[in-house]
Amino acid sequence: MAVYNEIQTGQLSIILAKRLGMKEGTPAPSLQPEIHAALVLENDRPEWKVLAGERLVAGGGAAVASAGTRSKFRIFNPLGSNTLIVIERLWLTSASGQLSLRRTGSIPIATPLTTVLMDTRDRQVNTSGNNSAAQVGYANEVGGTPGSAIFYRSDTPVVERLVELSLILTPGFGFEADNQTDNVALSVHAQWRERALVPSELG
Image (cartoon, rainbow, N blue to C red; front, side, top):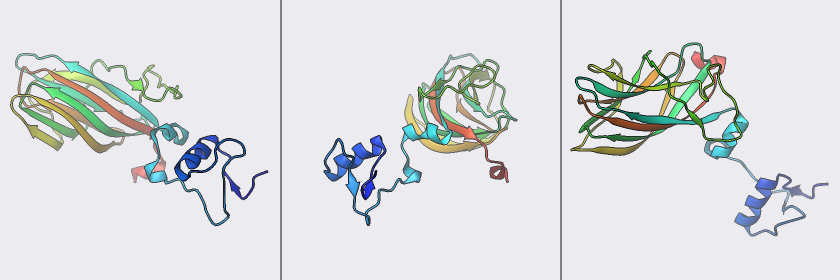
């Protein structure tokens, strides 16, 4: 039986014992009735995401240089996915002095890349056998893609950059990283999280 506010969850018991200088081991640490341990949900840890039904996903690779075309990296949330995708960070390498990131509408991905789950407890896959609801891939196309620019960088001669952002994609919207120069290779690694949509979120 718990004494006072005895911390019965093993993980929290260890954390509180170390942070507060309390005795570890059995019995579990106890708090006085007027002291309560709080979990700040807005700052929850990555290993708690799976408990909330969220997947942590990574994907990326490199697009080769191709004469007369721009190298592009894309993430697309397909219509009907019933999934919310939040892109959190990108590692970008490009020999181009100009690089643009933009939010787009529907974008073609001819050969989707395989994505990787970042939590080994998560075994969910979609019907295509991929680990994500998102379609991820590269393209070499003439000219730019219509969309709303969210980041632009001009460096000479090489761009190597970590970009952290919170780009939220509902079904039917996508993201693209685009060299602004033809015939230049582009390498991108992305990390994002995704979860099932709540009906009220679409307005």
